[in-house]
Length: 111
Length: 114
Image 1 (cartoon, chains in turn blue, cyan):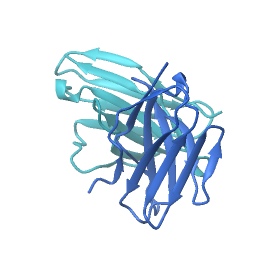
Image 2 (cartoon, rainbow over the protein chains, first blue to last red):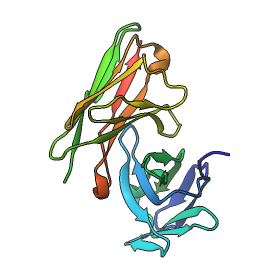
Image 3 (tube, rainbow over the protein chains, first blue to last red):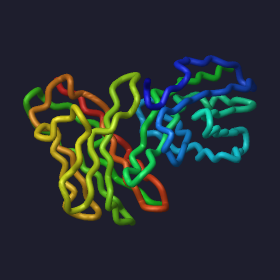
């Protein structure tokens, strides 16, 4: 089983659509969870951290279900500028602190 | 905010030569640096973890004699790809752990070996 698994995509949606990304992780000891976005041929940039209580940042909402080891990201009212690859990232527990990345899901928002 | 300056951004080299990638923390001390690589349409995969003043810890399957990591100071970590071959062509990125402040990413290096 892959350590961090995401929807394979790609997703093609019209402007204004709502799109949801799903992610599961295998390491139950994982402590911290993130969504990053990566534009073509660039480094990933932090979109938001993910908390058990759920968190929202404008059009973006992230949820974490530790029991199911499941993370989600919802984008509402999608914009052309949201087109990117979305990476689910999990921090290992213990003293390692290494990050494990999902393969990413490509989103293209069309006019 | 905290910045990790990574150079070069891209490099093309001939097969058999060595390439050095530098990551420099500009306004903080990077005690831990992770080195990742990303092949096309693949996830970022951890190659090694380096801590200032000690030997790097390599992930399984990563040749330590081929990918030399030096973290001799708190502001500089380097990755040298020795005797590079076309299959080493990839996107290499350093990620610094800043304690409770989280992670700071370098901008990445796109290596093409011809």
